[in-house]
Image (cartoon, rainbow, N blue to C red):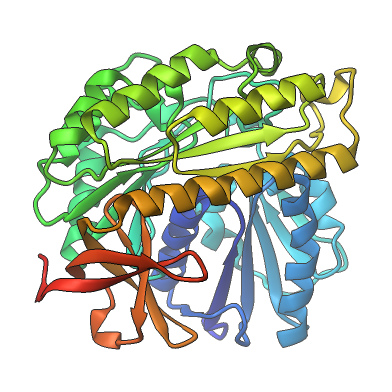
Length: 444
């Protein structure tokens, strides 16, 4: 193993996957490996997979081919949700040497004693019931912001979702460990931390190995707000039924939490929500959006929507479209429903044709563009703090305000990972806001 010095990583899917990839990469570094870009020649390529949609599954093969083009003799390892759900399927992909499931992925370096490529891939995949312990993770070094994992798994039984089968029961990091990780991230000079997990509003369950809630998500938020050195804390996706009004009110007056929420809706039809086995109805969603806007008028609110779920008639789709059109939200993440094995939805009748799913997706993406434009326009003339990213995109550096307005200015590497006070001036032809500095001094 000492002779194999270079390892590269590719991450598919969610922020949680990015946090875990980064942590796994650090374990390689501790074993003496050098991390390189995925496009570079490496001795080992690790692909962290996702299985939320069919497209994520299909991308895996092309990523393996991409690695083989760079080094056909490299050792290729598949980890993540797809590796847990369908290990044999991944093992059959040409070029794959090792497949690790939900618990095994965190012990990846234990499987590297023999990196000789074999005719058949080796599989180490647990029964998902064995994924009942918690592994901490956070991302560092890949982006301006860090993704801090606080929770894993899910006890919900949504009829379309395979995540409980891929990640196991709901369980949480203990509060002190989360605070320690947050302090470590802050000490590295990271300006923003994004809280991530499968169902972060369920935080506290399984914190000490049982189902009791020793702490709540609100306890977590309040404790993190006291950690020194963190300029921004951002809540990632949180279920509407778990977003308490007390949490919303606290964010509105907190030291570090920003006015940005991403709240899955999935459908604006109560009948579809019931068929999905979601734990709320549209009326509760309206209440949450209204409460956020009441205490944070400039807050950005993102929404997840699934179109083409079985039984989604034209009337029910229009119910969703009109519901979202009238709601004071900022953007949408639109997903066309895709059948997943071992889910109840895959056996349902009244299947929506793929062509209809695509048409409805396009309609909602158009609505999302309209909503984002309207939200950006509502922020023109106001002052905000922007955190600049680290990538040069066609001569511009981009960044996000605390309420998630995307801005750009001519490339200047000195701006990377810095906070600046700005005034939003106008929206560019590509839908990104230009600005002027209120002050050239760094905001923090």
